[in-house]
Length: 134
Picture 1: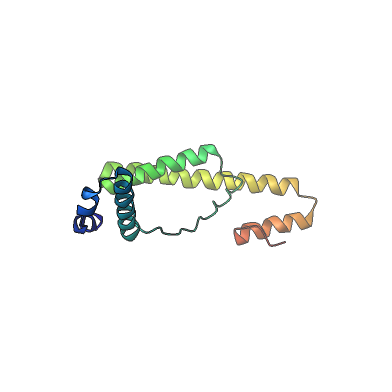
Picture 2 (picture 1 turned 90 degrees about the vertical axis):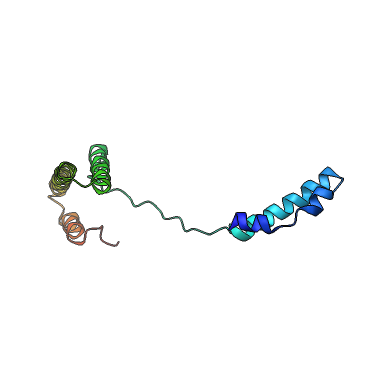
């Protein structure tokens, strides 16, 4: 579309211009007008990054990156080997995530064993999947 618009422009007035500054100004105005017409700015909403769960550490993130790379390799070239690699890594990530989450909440329950209010807050967080509203 941009190249079509450029080829439709009559450039004779710019070529005939004796003053190089005016010729450049006409050229620049014409070019930017076509650019603005064919390539408008779009506004985008930037989302905030979600806060990491407390049990997600660098080790788990590396494992997730490996899993995602293996998934991409499997999708690009599906075969038994890439499928088995991806599934093994997926299962490893899931079991590690569960173990880290279990350890995190186990420590939280131990720390707050004598505080029923804090204990119930943790229980509700586990049930709801997010911290309870204050």
